[in-house]
Structures are given as C-alpha cells and as structure tokens.
Length: 480
Image (cartoon, rainbow, N blue to C red; front, side):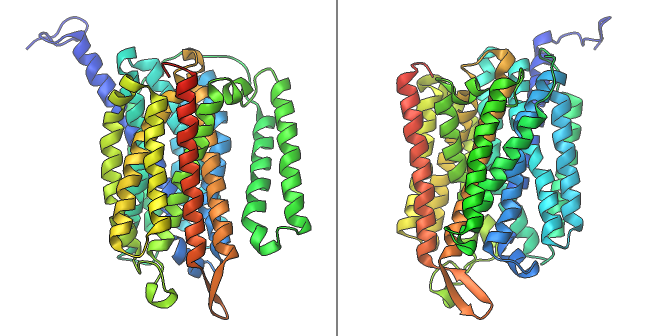
C-alpha cells in the first residue's frame, strides 16, 4: 500500500475520509452531550441524602438542581453568541472546561453554598448542546443534518438517565457523594479530548461584542422568579418578600426586553424568541423541558420514599432510581437514532407532538397509579419513548427555519427556554412538596402523597401543552 504526494492512501476515496471524520465528529459531540446531560441529573438521586447531610429541606436542596439549570439558561445564549463571534469549537471547549472545574469544586464541597457554586459552574456547560448543533450545521451535508441533530439532541435524555444509574451504583457502595463528581470530571476530560482531535472550527465568524447587560438582567429576573416560587410556601405567598420578588421579576423582564430591543447585538434576538415560527418552537421547548427536568427529580424522590413509614412510595435505594431508569435510557437511545427518519417523513413538529404525548402519559400514569413497581416501570417506558422522540425532533425544529448563519443563536435561544422551563419546574414542584407535608417528628417532615400527585399532574399538563403547541405549529407552518 502506497500513499500519494498529499498523503492519501491509494485505493481509498476522499469521501471515505470525509465520512470517517464526520462519524468521529458526531461521536465526540454525542460524548460531550452525554456528559453535559449526565451532570444535570447526577445529584438528583442524592437529594434525599443531601437534606440530611447538609441540614436543609426540600426547597433548599432543590437549588442543587435548579442552580445548574439557571446558570445554563443564562450562559447558553451568551456562549452561543461567542460561538458566532469566535467559532463554535472554542466555545464548546470552554463549556466543557467549566464543567470540569465545577465538578472538582463539588468533589471537595462540604456545605450547601459551595455545592451550589459548583453546580452553577457545571450548569454553564448546557451551552454545549446548541453549539454542537451549530457545528453540525456548519460541517455536515444537508442530507445528514436531520439525523445528526436528532442523535445529538437525543443524548440529553440518554445521558440524564445514565447519570441516575451511575449515581445509584456509586451510592450503593458509599454515602460520600464526592465520587459522583469525580466521575463527571473524568468523563468531561475524555469528551473534551475527543472534541479537540475530531471537530473542526468551521462556519462564518461574525464581529460585534457580547451583551453582558442583557445576560445580567436575564440572570436577575430568573433568580427573582425562581426564588419567589421556591420560597413561597415557607415565607407565605402573600408575604412582602415573595410579592417583592415577583414584582422585581416582572420589572426586570420589562427592562430586559427594552434593553434587548435597543442594543445593536442583543443577547437574545427577540425575533428568534417570539417570531412567527420561533415562538411556538420555543414554547414547546420550554414546556417539554419543564416536564422532563421536573420528572427527573420528582420520580427520584418518590422512589426513595419509605412506604412503611409514610404509607406511599417504593422504599427504593439510590441504586433503585437508576435501575428503574434503564428502560427509559434504552428507549431514548433507540429513538434518538431513529427519530430523524420519522421527522423526515412527517416533519419535526408532528414528531415532537407525538413524543410530548408519550411524555404526558408517563406523568399521567404516575398521577393515577403509583403504588407498585410495575407502575414505575411503565412510566419509564412511556417517558423514554416520549423524551427520546421529543428531544430528537426539537433540535431540528429549533433551527430549520432560520438561515445557517443564525443556527447557533437560534439553537441557543431554544436551549435557553428549555433549561428555563426545567428550572421553573424544579421550583414549582419543590414548592408543592414543601407546602404539603407529613410531620414524622419534631424535626422530620416529608411531602404528602397528594403533593406528589399534584406535581405529577402539573408535569403531565406541561407535556400535553407541548404536544398541543407542536401540533399547532405543524398545522400553521406546513413542511415544518
């Protein structure tokens, strides 16, 4: 076997090298997507333990989950903008580097405040998903775009479920949560190396400067909104503090919109947020994110609730949470690889509607029947089918109606509203569970069964709402 002057092996075709490179790029992006989604859920099975170890309550410990979603919601459009300015690959590397740093902070943390800081750093990596979709649009041929975007988008649900299982296995051998974060740090390093050696920094660069004022206002309004929702039961919904937080959130929202309309290069182009096609795509994304992220934390807590002490729950361990999630992970993996073909035939909007219906049925099942292991297994089967189809379709729906030059920021905005929806879900369900409790002793309280049912219903409504919005989108915009 010989080589030509340019180093090409005789007997091979240039397209063979292209296919190999595209395959390696997709593998690297999927690996990074798995790590990002894994970090979002690794703490969820540990929340009941953290309540005891960190001397806090449900509302307090929920911030370990919410902080990551909140920072992700703010960082996603900011890093997407940086991606358009300096290249998407460098920003992916930044996102993964911050994930690794946040993992190390959590691996040494001993207090709730330090854990929240580490989790907020980890959450910044959520920007990796829209950046990855931008790399795909810059790199892959048109005929492979839908399937490639669907696969990377589908890793979100798969990695989340794998995170639950990995945490369960580790927690079955130690009560120390730190090994979980060392795991995310190591996996983050591996994914970063894969991206460095395989992904190319293609795409048109745009000048300008980032909208830091818009980012600060967005962070402030989300903090006020989420803090008001999560602390409402403890402070009182009519208390001056809670009312002040909601008023501040409303005022900051108005100021943020005004600023975004005035600056030349806003953090969020409102046309891509509330434009004719963007609005329904983003609303569906927010509702589906609300349902998925809310389901992760809610189901985990319910599985670990001791039935012999409170009269409901499945008396499971941390490992049980991961084992129940295996059907969900398997189905998410299957549909993330196959949904592209469905979307190509009927369009991503209708495909998303189908997935969202299955997701709604999952939460609806648990609201009606949740006393047996079979109930949890069936709910996870429906959940895996729904989120596997829904998220694979959502990645395409978010960007297919915008020019290639705006794909990164369009995907970033869609990811922003999805993570914002998820962070709101954590605050809402945490508020419901905190407001209705059973007192097992002077210093011990657990949510009532009715609180869980109300939360399951709330998440089901969110998923069915996403299905309705997606269906309406498909009917209004034929071909999408």
